[in-house]
Structure formats: structure tokens, C-alpha cells
Length: 472
Image (cartoon, rainbow, N blue to C red; front, top):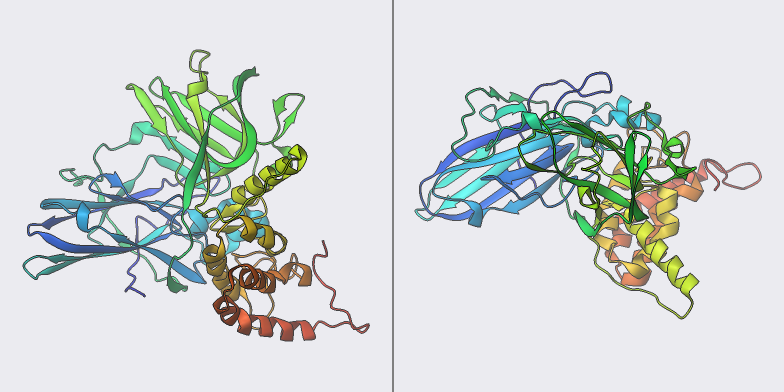
């Protein structure tokens, strides 16, 4: 299934550490005078999108549509909007996040140098059928109106900065005056293959409240008791312009939060969210285009009266993988190992298995290979594995070589790969076949496996061994 992708954007400017470009809002108003019998929407957001219809957020989950290389695959999602259309004016609204389209916070792995890097873009097509037999098509073009959102800064690894004073009430609803907004501009067509996302969405799987709140220097340390992955929901009544920062981490030294073990971006940017209050009563903030791996949150900018347990709620997130199996026995230590393994697996499953949710968030193939068997014993992950394998096959180069991590902007072919890591291409289909009896996943990957074996034949040493890349 494909659709004619016409990409638009607010401007061609890209956000960076030294130049903040707000995430763009885009909106389109249209009339539906007749009774709607069917309405279907296809949407591709590069990198991430948040979708609203008549003011209601209907996005399938966090970080939609997927985390991929736009040079390889352009993921899109499909929505049935039949029951959401109303008589008269209707509005489709979208906010775009940087995602992989502008992943400047991953320069360690050269994502900032990826040839696709650019401003966020949107492609959208809404087809409506009316009871009288007429149809209406709403497609992304220069008639969409666009304006900066209150999201001043967003990066998958670094965090998100939000200024609530810049909110425009009702921007995604009927009756809003967008005469001060600019028209969107046409964006160049990306190079990737169109693909409907079949992986499970990322959803909130658990909510945690702090087990302890203590004073730490000029801030307050919130301890949630377990190390997992997700974001915090912030709830407070603040003063106009009050700036609150949330620094997320997993490690304490002498009782104080320490982020040295996860630094890979400039100081002050690692896993940090900032919220600026509008100051007109109760306010709630949940970051949209990032996530963090953490147990602790250091909150700065609040008063002692605001430092309550109700200030923060931990929204634990992961791919919405159904439960498939479990383990319990009479030994508490073994049960604890099972619980920690399950939690670690889920914290590292954001569309595909990653190496860590706090520092890298990368799809390292060695980690995925050795964790595949226990993941499949516990969770129904075969759909998400199949989707990620499609990305692995697209990343394979003309020689048959594989990068050490997928997605990649080109990094990982000369360092970070090798037989011990590339084995994910073979091991994951094998274990899916063993535990699910799925032969189709073997057929889908057989060609890539043979190409890789041919590549290995060119790397045989004089002693008959194939030994290159990472060995651990």
C-alpha cells in the first residue's frame, strides 16, 4: 500500500545546539457539508508527528510513526476518521518533531552528518466519501497553514524544551483564526521506500509515583524506585515565566545525581526537559518527542511548596508487546532476575531492541541477537522484529556487509560490526521460527543472509578464520 507523498514543511531551517528552531504546527481546515460515510487518513511525519483531528489527539502512540533512516524507509500510518468527521468545518492539525530527520544529538554515531538531515516534513492524505456519492481529498500542499509551536527544542536523546506562554488556544480546532499563520512550503521528496508501519506502537505501560523526594543542592531529587524508560508528567500551579528543569539519570554518587556515565552530548543537554509556565492555574506537561532511561529526576526551579510527590508521575513506556510467557519459582533471587530482565527488555524496546534507553538508544545488532530468545519467550515481539529486519535488509550495502547498528546514517560499517554482531540477521529469524513456527520470516531474510555469507567469504583470513569487528 502506498500513497502519493507530497511533503511540506514550515521552513528549511534545522534545529541545533547553537540554534533553536521550534517544532512546527501545521493545520488544514475544510468543510464537510454532507454526511460522511467513510474517511481515511494516511500520514508520514519526518521525523515524528503528533496528529489532532478537531482538537483531539489521536496519535497511535509516542514517537510515531517509527525510528528509521529516511533514506531507507518512509514510514506512514493509517487512521480511520469516519466517526471523527462532523458537519461543517473540520480541522486536521499536526506537530512535527525532529526525530531521525534531524538527529543532531547523536553526533557520536554521525547522525548529524546523515545526508538526509533536514527540517521536519509532513505528507498527509485524507480521503472522504459522502452519502450523496461525492468525495473530497485533503492533501498536504502549500494551502496548509503553519506556525511555530511552544516546543522550542526537541531531540530524541537530549530532551525537549516547552514554553507554555507560546500556546495558541484552539489552534487545532474549528473557528481558529489562522490569518497570522504562514503557508507551508513544498519540501523535496525523500529517497526512502514508502512503507505502512506494522510494528506495535509505543505506549504507556505503567505509571509510577516517587518513593522518595529529597533536597539536593538547589533542586529536589525524585526517586522512583526502579530504573526503566519513559518520560515524566509534570503537574503544578506555577508563576508566569517560571522555568522548571527535569534532569533524568540512573546513577547516584554520594547521594547526588550523576550523569557522567551517560554523557555523549554537550554538557547540560543530556536527558533534560525544560518547562516554562504560563501561570494561569493548574498546568500539565508531558514531553512529546523524546524519552529517557532513568530512576531519578533532579528538579530545579520549583519552590519547597511545589516539591510534592504529586509534582511528577513516571510514565513508563515501551513498544506495546503482548505478554506471551513468564516465569516464577520458589527462589526470590531467581524471580528478581526474571523481573529485572523483563523490565530491561521492555525499557530497551522502542519499535526495535536497543542497547540502552538513556545514552545511545541505538539498535545495536549484537544486543538484539543475544536477547532475542528470552524476549520471544516472554513477549509477542515477532511483528516488531519483522519490521526491524526490513530496516536491516535496507541497511545492507552492495557488498553484503552490515553496519553494527540499525538505523544508521552510514556509521558502523568500518567499526562496530563483525560476525559476532551481524548475526542478528540470522538469529532473530531463526528464533522466531523456533518459537512461533513462522517460516515466512525465513523466506523474507534468506536472500540477505546469503548475500552476507558471500561477503564473509571475502573476509576469510589465511588461517581460515573470519575474525573482524567487535568480538564481545
